[in-house]
View 1 (cartoon, rainbow, N blue to C red):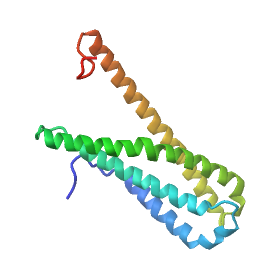
View 2: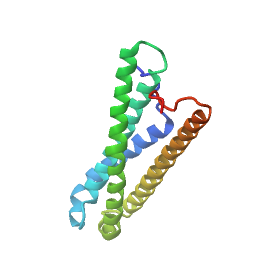
View 3: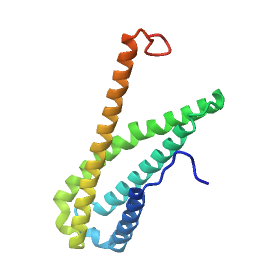
View 4: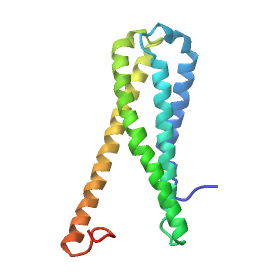
Amino acid sequence: MAMRGVDFKWYDGFFLSMLATSVIIVSINWRRYRLCAHPLHIWIVVDYTTVFVFRLLMFLDNGLAAGMGLDLGWQQRYTRFCGRIVVLSVLVLLLYPFLWVWTVIGTLWFNSARSCLPEEGQKWGFLIWLLFSYCGLACIACVAVGKWLNRRHALQLRAQQGIPVSEYGV
């Protein structure tokens, strides 16, 4: 059963196919990574898994947000709202900072150990994944800042019109 608000896009399919292919390649060459000074194979698997969990939580948040539009009573609104708070807290306070730190660690490990990768194609695979990681993390940061600025602007307009900015009248 499809969840309303959860929208599987073409890039999700691309990501899943890239994830599956890369995990298969890394698992085939798992023993060859022992020559590396740093565990690049573990880094890439943890990074893929974290990004996959991040995307699943984004799907969950979209589904919860889509269900908040109808007025189905305070219990359902409150439950969905609390669910969104939990999901967004995990995303913003745990996974997003972890992905930044883990990507920087992966970059440092890749720079010092790229000559030990089993195949030439894997060097490019790691490099492209690092590039995608930095671009994705920067895009998420830009979107978040843009949404915050839009909300701040709307609240300032409300304050100028004499409308309370919050339910507390502040």
